[in-house]
Length: 178
Image (cartoon, rainbow, N blue to C red):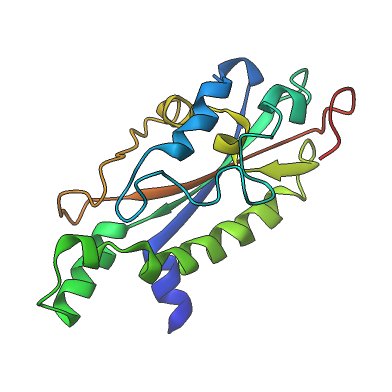
């Protein structure tokens, strides 16, 4: 059934980490302005949508760094998904087969459920998208042996994986109430 299919293409993890491993800087918030297909000025939400940079505090103002943080990530087997799309639509190129429009909703739904599980843990009062608060997500994920591939679409391979990543922790009441 549907549950089996969702389970088959997405896996999730919640990992406790020492806040000292978090690398963050305002410059990482600017990565949203990096051009990508169909958006020569980067993400159209940058400086427009609530919850998007650049007007957001850095992660150390969001969470109390005296406590551990929690990395919540969902692994989506996008290479397998693209292969199934290629079978259905043989005339499609890689960009079409990997188009997030077709898989991102399912991956986000699973990630949202995972975030709700994390909110029940001691030490998790809030969860945010780390890149919005200046976290170097590539370096963060290397701590789990995961090298993020930013080339999009990737060269097709069944092993291709994409990740949704969130960060949870104790709210830093001294500087910011989220």
